[in-house]
Structures are given as structure tokens and as C-alpha cells.
Length: 351
Image (cartoon, rainbow, N blue to C red; front, side, top):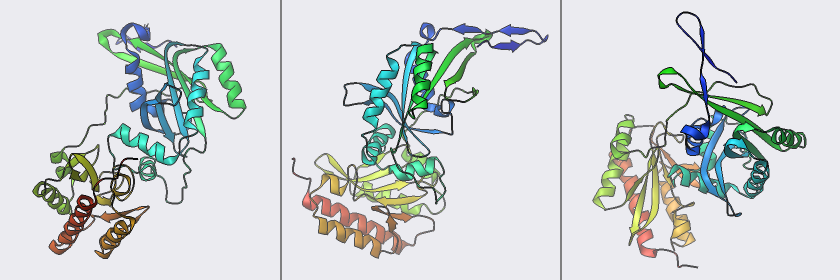
């Protein structure tokens, strides 16, 4: 592909193609794909859930993603020329990804986002803005994307054959161009995947961890409950871990932290809310010796406050109104009860 700029006098001036490996690291393109995944998909959007994901084959997947339907997407990146063995490697990755269940995918997402509070189903639904009637079955199918500066004819032919046999493989070529004044451009074309090229804009966005100040500023007029919870945490020396959107409140057992609850601001996919942490990574069920009947009693106590509602396996307290002092005290009392149970029964004995 040749690119031209239009000079003030109406003449065309060609941009100079710059080989990727000369002035760039492979990680730069990987960053671009991570933050602009929609540029390589032929039908809709992608949610990146992992980068440099280790497999059981002693290898690493460059990027792992989900599409709108919950299918797992393997993105394999090769700079300069895509070698013949790339498709075989990508197929190996897809065979690994095919074995991942929803809980494992959720664990990969939590590690990638540095947020142990994330629920895969809720985050996926919020990211793609799914309608209530849209059902998702995670990892029902797998997709492969091969991205390189040059996709050779043998790779194109093999990828087209695999697509004809029902294996969803897409191949994408990219090129860098250098313009006068230091402007750098990236062009890309889907060469196997039945889609016309799309113009893209490079983003330098990242996934920063939210700060206390930013979180408090983001709250709406009903957010006083969170300020009181954070005061409660300071008063009792309970660790607070900050994620990309919200926080987790933890009980400290000699340096081992057990999640008591999660808090989210208005802009998160969960809305301004408080979530319990009975299950999942870092939870009562996963880390502590709290008996099942005690966990059930804690759940019933939360429901008895009249402020929590079922949300899958967890409970959700929607902070969509101004809570009274009495209601706030009910929440704090329940948090204290959970923390006390954690300290009473301690951690699970090692297997």
C-alpha cells in the first residue's frame, strides 16, 4: 500500500514506508493492538482479557480476547514476515484456549485488569452493552487472528482453507509510514477475513489504578456511604486495594488479605454499588475456614438489611439513593460481622 499527503499547492507527496523492525519494538505494535483491538476484527469489537498468557505448552499467547458472543480469540503477532509455522503455533494456542472454562477466563481477566473484584459475565455484558435478552455462552467457539507486516501467500492459502472448514482464522497485514515532521502512520489491511481495510488511530491509553481522591471525586450525590466505609476501614486498619475502577475492602490475617466487599463508582460497568465477596478469588469461600453455615447466615443477614439484592452468586447493594444514618450503620455493622467471622475462623489449612 502507498500513502500520499497533499501539499498546499495540490501536489501529492508520498510517505516513506518504514520497516517495523528498524525503528520499533514488537511490543509497540502489541500495545497498539491491545488498546485498539477493534481494528483487526472483521465483525464488531473485541474485549482484551489477557496479554502474554502462559499456556500448558510452555508458550505464551500474545493477546487473548473475547468477542461479543463470548468466543475466545487468540491474537498471534509476528513482526516483519509471518513465517509458515505461525499458523501451527496459533492452532496450538487455540487448542489450549478451547479448554478454558468461564472461571479460568475470569481469573485471566482479573489478573490482566489488576482487579480481583471483576465478574466476567457482568464485565463482558457491560463492555459490549448487551441487551437484557442477549444470552452469552463463554468459549463455545475459538477464533484466531494472525497479525504480521507481511502475510505470505502460503499462510493466506492455509488460512483460507481453515476458514472454509469452519475454523475462524483472520490474517491482518500492517505497515508503518514516516511523514515529514516526524508524523508516523500505521496502515492495516485484513487480507484473510472478508473485510475491507479500516482506518485506525493509534492510542496511548492504559489501564491505570484508580486513586482514593479520584474515586471520591467520581461519586454522585448518593456516594456518602462509600466515604463512611473508607473511614470505617481506616478506623479498623482494614486494607483497601484499588483496582482500575473501584476498591476491595479486606480483612488482614497476619499479612494475608481476605476480601470483605467491593465498591464501584457510577462510571463502572456495575454502576455505583457495593458487592459481597462470598465466592471467587480472595473470597471467604476461597481463602478462609469460615463454615458454610456461617457464610449462609452472613448472606441472610445482608439480605435482612433490606439494602442488598441477589446478583448471581453474590449480593449487590445499589447506591442509587441517599442512605440514612441508620442504613449506613446497618451496612457497616454487617461489614464488621463479616470481618469478625474471617478473624475468628482464619485461613483454610493448606492442602
